[in-house]
Length: 255
Image (cartoon, rainbow, N blue to C red):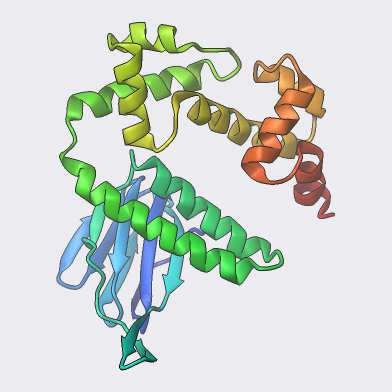
């Protein structure tokens, strides 16, 4: 994440810019777009672009830069050709409700900065998964607004009750949908089941509490509605790949 200054440039590779906050405007080729949280901008190789900040609302971005190649099998031989033609992506689109793509974008950036063993291979894999999630989101944008609004209402309810337990019955009554239909709609919209999404939301909050450093793992567990500290730790490790104590040591003490 960075807080950019004014710039004007043309790159020899592709770039994806995800806005995480603030304001301003970005010009891609001949068209200018407002900088709004949740927007994804795609800049193809060779396309001139510029950014004009809004100093009253400092913008913050996550960015991914990448090149691509075309691999072909010709008469039994593999040929690899540099491929810098534009991808089939719009220059600007909203990813505000594209939860799988947003999650993969964040994971990709985190893996790259962490520089753990094998990070380059993992980054390539995550990039491919993220691009697929973005393409799927583009295709699904015809999905009914009513269903999306109900999912947003559920997620807002989860945020407000992050330290509690929620049930599918409770959420179904909240949005007046049958539990089975709600489960299917939520999965189609977010890529997660209701429980998976709520657990991920809790673990994201747990990471914030751990980095603040004034709560023990047991206290964090209890603050997020987990009565069993070891169950909380298992969920944390399943989602993050490391235990809460390891996460704390790595991010607070650099161990």
